[in-house]
Length: 123
Picture 1 (cartoon, rainbow, N blue to C red):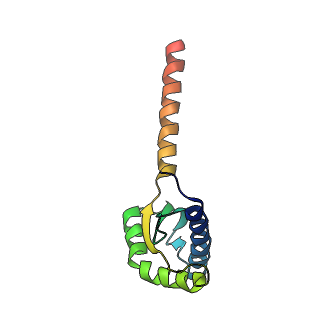
Picture 2 (cartoon, helix red, strand yellow):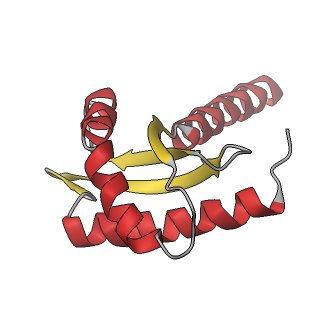
């Protein structure tokens, strides 16, 4: 399903504001690790935002997502203060794990293994 222009606009706006909130409140720092917002996708009615988070040097990523879900109401309140003049209704926030980097690393390893096997066969 293709996103509408308004979904993309609001998604970018929510992404920018959440990034500022995370920086100000220190949500990006997670012990020795770090969290970052990879993408924000809005539902067609603009009432829900799927916030995809990626983590660096965080062991238990599911627990980190649960931590953000637990603070979703607080984060939404801060987002509401920033967007009250831009949106009629502040979207509900759903935090999800962005595993695109892990998939890319896995694919890269598979390609390296294939190339290694081919070079061994050619030798």
